[in-house]
Amino acid sequence: MSESEGVYPQYRFRIPAGACDLLLVRHGESAAMPAGSGFPTTPSGQADPELSPAGCEQAVLVSARLAKVGLDALYASSLRRTQQTIAPLVEQTGMKPTIDPDLREIELGEWEGGEFRRLANIKDPRMMRLLRNGSWSQVPGGEDSAVFAGRVQAAITRIAAAHPDQRVAVVCHGGVIGQIIALATGASTLSFMGSDNSSISQVIVHDGHWIVRRFNDTEHLSPAFTTAAAPPE
Image (cartoon, rainbow, N blue to C red; front, side):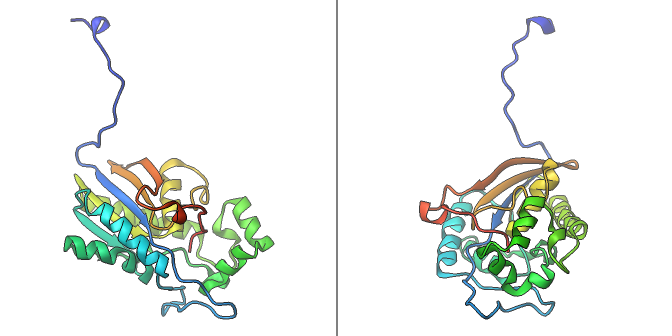
């Protein structure tokens, strides 16, 4: 049969051989910050709150879903809210997560320790300018945007190279997920910063190409957890 006589069904996406299937999970809701005090911080000064009771519930729900999808490896950032989020999944699967510091949230300089959250809640004009301009460069003393993008890209490239033909859950942060989607799509850095707590996004990494398959999937959550997306932290 000649090519002109062939039948061509619509293309259906299939994960290419050798690709890594990354399920990017935002951590569960973190604890509220009391007025007049900041969050506990890491030795480097980065905010390190624990999960709220709601966040613990979200962690159980997302872990129950992920335990059924055939994971080959688990990764989390060095901050405790991601490790608390992945803990139920570790218990269910018996898999040990790899802790990768490059998956930690962007460092927020003068807005660290909870100040970023306070400014977001009061709709401070500086925060509004940051959101309009779509760049972390508005944060005084914060991590350089290019440095942040570089370490996130390095982490994802490293994970993908270690897991060809495998599915990997990566529990990280809203800013990190937004940066990954921006790198994959060419969108502005903050275009995808609003993922819900414990949501799942999916990126296929193959031969240097990053293919976005989903963003902010919250099918496992009740409506009470998905009515409003919080800013990254």
